[in-house]
Structures are given as structure tokens and as C-alpha cells.
Length: 251
Image (cartoon, rainbow, N blue to C red):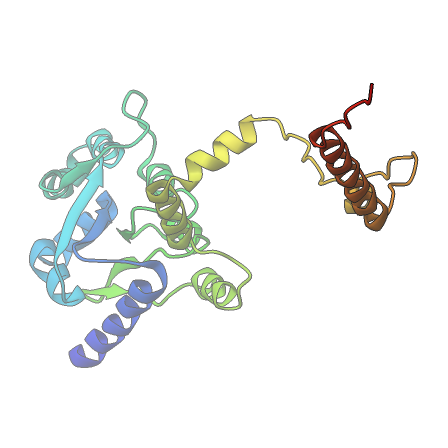
């Protein structure tokens, strides 16, 4: 039975790895109800969760979950001691704490960007968590830790991404990071800030043709050559006349 349970857990973990980019060390967000159930069933959380998930984990909680156990009093003192051993993640309710159920939901936001596993025994919280895609749930049943199967919202989200209807949050982050690296995001912002300039269209090629000048037609080349020859001939005759001596006069 234990081998079958680990195989099912491995299959579920691979689902979240491939579709929602979960990586080790897995972050396990724990509330007081889970610690109380582990105390009653004598479960060592630090030892058994890493073995069950077959990987390195980081056990953590929130300040609101600790405050809730302090408010409930001595009955949950043992659960409070267990919960104090884990790392405390910062939430938005440091000055005004809220119930642990609301705090867990606020930590996940709409897409669980920090890839938290949630360990809780609160039935109302699990119903709300199943509406958020990509949230693995851990709870205790019959002295054993169980990783719940992917919720219907997670399955629908994966199917929509595969059909090309949605872009996963991881893909959006990759696209934005690539834009930042290549400077495309900065160029897009600059383009949006600047007003669009009207493009100068190229002139019509027919309008660029040279206009013909109106005037007298140029004389043909033959006439010009003839005139040049005549002028040269006349100059030659004048030269011969000046060179011949005048005849002597008789007295």
C-alpha cells in the first residue's frame, strides 16, 4: 500500500513539475491544524514529508498562523511549538493579523506564483484552494500524509494552455524577462510614450520626370559642321591675299 501511495504521489508531483514549473526545494506552507493532526497521530513532519515527496523541502508558515495558535490558548500549545520551528514567510497582515485561512489564500494570490504546497486540515480552506490552479494540497488521513490529486481547476487550466487558449504565468514571466534582456520592453515603452509621426510617402515616379523645355529646335549636326568648314575656308583665303606682294606700278 505504501509503494502504491508513493507512486501516486510521484505522478502528482511530476504533473506540477511539468505543467506549473515546480522545482526543489519544495516550499510547504503549513498551518496550525496540520501541526495539531500530526501531533495527535505522532507524525514527524520534518522527517516524513521529504521522504513522501522524494525531494528536498522547505517547511514554512506565516505570522498570522502563529498568532492564531497563540489566541486559541493552551489546547494548541503543542501545535504552536511545532509551528514555531519552521521558517516564517512575510505576509501583508503584519500589523493587523487575520485568520490563517485568509492568510494562506492571500499568499497564493490567483496563480500561486511562489509555487507553495499547502498543508492543512481545514476543509473550508481546501475547497477554496481547489479553485486556484496549480496548488498541491497535503493532509493527514489514518496516520499518513497524503498528497491530493490535481484539482479540476488545475486540469482545466493545463488543457486550456495546451489548446493555445491561455498563456501560462511561467511563459509570461519568460517572455517579459526575454524582453527585458533584449531591451524590447524599454523600446515598447518609448514607442508608446512618443506620438506617432506621419510617414512621408514617396512621390509619384511619374511626377519626377523632367519637363521638356519649350523653345527653338536645335539645328542639325550636319549644318553646324558645314558652317565651321566655311569659316575656316574664308580665313585661309584672307591669309593668302595678304601674303601675295602687290604688282609694281609703271611710270
